[in-house]
Length: 534
Image (tube, one colour):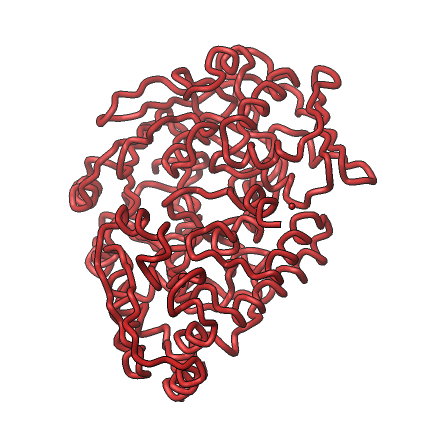
């Protein structure tokens, strides 16, 4: 054999969901992690020093619904938006909070309730106005009323006020270990806008886009382009670039985002030299594209992990022995190879948090990736399984993975009814526990374990374990990292005991760029400060 009144509190705490967008991974690993499986990180050494000038044209797969991150958690909203806007804090390469507009990390009172935050000197908005604490307070209040992250934090907010022109005070009702990382999140993030813009658009998406970022907004022609230009009065941090923060320099004069929905057109537009960069290129094109001398093809940092999620509220998979048998039967490498092709774009790993994060742990590894058919048969017998059909829903991206897993499971005696459907149908049907037993999905990156969707008891699948609720509540309150890490490992141990979900493996996407694009930092999401054209 191959070895290979708590729910309400948690719903408020963990409702921080990006939507159906892939977002995970990064570059720097902790001491126990390994390198991603393929080309991630910096490009090869460049032959010239950075220089300013030119236009960088970036192909994206659609227009964002808005460029107001308070109003949407769509990935494209913040990918475009965080070139224009910035928050008090952002995330470094290990996805830990670092200062951005704030002078430093906040001063926190001994009772862990009061956060005092000072702004950096010399900050300006794109309209020339100096950034003040009044802008910060107004922006955070708007974010607290519109963003899922903001709403969650504001449920526990006692007061928010300006102390002086450069200082704000945020006071909580009770201690919360996720306050800072919530303020630092880019998706649905707490970006700072001019107070007058907040007052003009208090409860609907912005139609004017004025921030403090390295690029300023010029024009948006839907289905054609979004045009940004360098903000010459930008005040970069005097620390090395790290993650989504540190020093940011707008080398190109102009940055354009070009929406193209057709995958092959995205490829040919960069291959032919019409545009400079494209994300979300089909991974089955990698072997051809990596040998093209005119472009660079890279696997992104891992963005998420593939998962088979169980119905724990009703039906046959509500039996924990059935779920344990399901996990025991699976050999992950051939499943990932069948479903996602080249090994450059996936890896086998047991952790529910990615290797690039400080949260990574191999707790539970002895129960992961076993491919142990005999053990699965034994667990099925203990479950009293009589060959009842197991209804399994899968969207297009995960279907081949699911089919490969189905073939393994049937060797152990499972009877699988695998149903292929569009993702929108899966998303609709999964809310009804009478319609399914398993569905395939992707679990996207989160910087904090409390934000992991599969640990949310209200998430479709409904892991309502009393022990989970207790651990998650304690994790949310605790502020000390070492204690929080120990709690996270307890949660991961419980994950492999109760098997609410099967983690298959981490995955990345394919990006291509012209040879003369330099300085690109290949993280989980794309950004183009510190990038130039050689």
